[in-house]
Image (cartoon, rainbow over all chains, first blue to last red; front, side, top):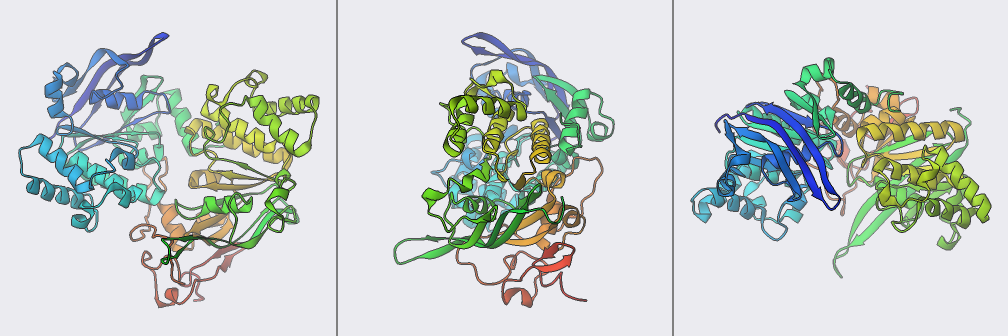
Length: 266
Length: 325
């Protein structure tokens, strides 16, 4: 796993709708560094997920990028031809989605789905790919990985399915992984295990981007925070600064709401 | 809240079993395994637990949306299970429910006005003019405006929809409201507003709340007492401050220590359990945490440990942690 930083600059875009153009992202910019988890926090409609999808160029077709670039080691991903982008997606930059059990294919064994990702990006035999799949499941601490690889997604609990999805995102040893609300809907004890796992993986040199609305998770695992609101970045700072010296009134508000400080909610 | 406040909701020995499996291979899934609880007027009791703990089944059994297998439920002193389901209307004037997902619990083809007027017609038999006046009063009470009355659910935001859900529950002036994860689908800023609204309404109307949630920050903020549920049974209960300050049961300790805190530099002393919550099918008669608990001893496997008092109003069902020194 080589180190690469990811830089988003001036990302601006709109949705095409029947009623005309609706601007949704305005001059979004931030940097995610290797060996760190960078959080993008914001509430519903802040544009955090759309930003993540735009990095991989898998945003809905109605979303049009007007301006900006996504630099991976200095190369603008938004300017790559689609054929070359396909070699980046899943291999150099991959993504872990929110609802793991619906992100997995219900009619294929989990191990097979991991092996397919492997074979898509590298010439290797099916048997080697399946071995790699079992190794990847072991790496995310799934007990009895060889047996688990032959099971279908419905046989996995929510936490196990999320681990399998992380294994799939990591199987080609990407430089950047985007985690989109990876623990939303999971119980707190399982959430703590998954976040611990993400922390361990990142310490190994990965560049991780964590999309979340949970500031508790951010305080514990992230090195830097990007706060978004209404399609704009309102603050970008180290996690310590965000929590101890928040610079923007909205960050202050968000912190107060997360801490459920009496009387600040209204 | 005074000690003599009336009990508005009480359950004793509440059980719900499901028979599952194919013909000739019947097994029993125990969703709720003997739960006792009590909510007084003006009190908020939180029922916490993770997915699969049975907390939502408890809520549904209390109002007989699901028929309990055994146990007694009293709403404002009235036995609920003695009545035929068709005669529950009277009970539902005293106990109402607010559901988790305001998108699926509001009829998409009814306006806010119609949603709020329906219980007034069904339960109170109010005429059109009285209904209209009460509906206006209700939207005002939950912080909505008259202009919202002619909107449909899809024309409202998530927070506004949950306000309608609360107004609907309060329409008939119930004594107790069961709130099943009322804030878990809302953004944090909206969550705070809804909690403030619920607290203000409780102050004003002395309603009892049974607050079902997995959000421990919410419990700490709103609940007077907390019941911790694991695999169908209550493993610890007590005043919220006492349980958070000194959790006794290993499951409570694991749960509280896993919850992330939105503060910089807080190091949590994690109490780890092994593995994940097991399937509630054909459970042996022993502590439900055997196999996951690092403290388990032989005594834990003999029978299900009863709740033992560890402080004023505070009890835990752990033979290891509650043993006399």
